[in-house]
Image (cartoon, rainbow, N blue to C red; front, side, top):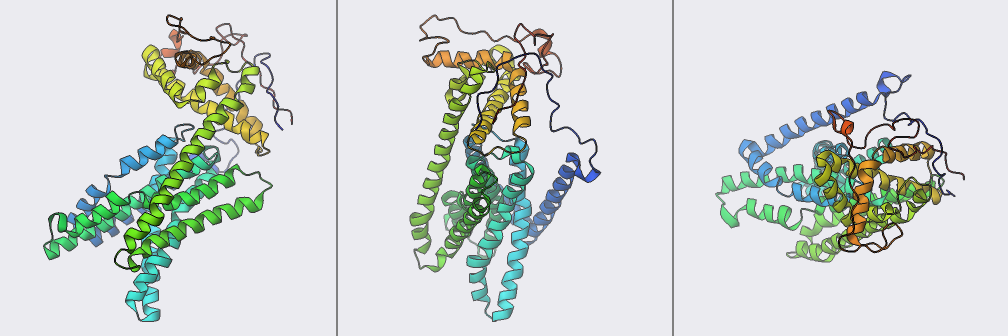
Length: 463
């Protein structure tokens, strides 16, 4: 079990970042090669899916579908980004998740569903039965597997961005939002083409009905289905390496739940005249409410974990006594960023935001280590996070202490603040604001670590 980290000792040289290029790696193992290959694959999938959807809907239908389908996207992405504010994952991971859902998963779904439906129609000589089986059996299996593949890839290749259930919910939800975006273009564009042939217009048109069902009533449907897979993968990511059965069975269970909900949703039109509304009210809305509660509860639990786990680093003088309280409150975090922006500009606010993210990662890393879930790179990762915090302390620490004082947290560092109590000042030194430099993002000056504060030496945990 992890113990309290050591107190600061003699100055230590910061570690070499792990994201640097590999010196003796083959060319295909380099990070930029993998990124370029993946980006090329997604772009090609996007071009192919664009051509296929445009061919089915026509130019005008495509533009109408695109304009209507994009409406719920900002709201969905903003909701998942809000859930991820405790330990925000990089934007490139969010972009990859959305692009995979909109391009790769959508292309796989269209090709596989079309092939399977045609094969069933040929084998049974019953096209109507083939369409029903394709919608209720084939489509849920293919689509949820294709969307879940994005979360699996992030878990395998961006493991540090995947720390638990909340990350699984966010990445799966954004992937589902991307898939729904492309699917809505197809359905809305096809509905517009139908209205052009039949002369439908206004609220009685097929386009209006499709828009109401897919964009107004159920914009969360595809994200909701995929979130089940994300939860399973998130629990697996939190499990120890020795619990192999749990790490395999829980993601499969999440995928099966996603497929089951998807099949029930697609088959609701076969349950009678009011089957769709019955499934929507009895299953979709309660499932959405339950998963929303689970995501918010998980977020609050992570904040509580931050407050509890960072106390060990206060004892070792890596953090000030006020910081765990401020970092364990989203309100205090916002106050700290506003304070930094007011006194140091946007660069200082970004520094505080990064400090908050690194501190959260450090707390969750220690929490996993104490519960026996430490990975092989635990020591290296903890050292990197501690040094990342130390480099930004002069900008972030006064802002966080100010947030605690404003909230009047009782504590030995301030006691109970009273009106007129002097607030901490944000110290941003001249050289730090030069071109290409970020406040607090500098190596320690001199043998003492700079500005009179010793630069803590790192010694790994004792197990």
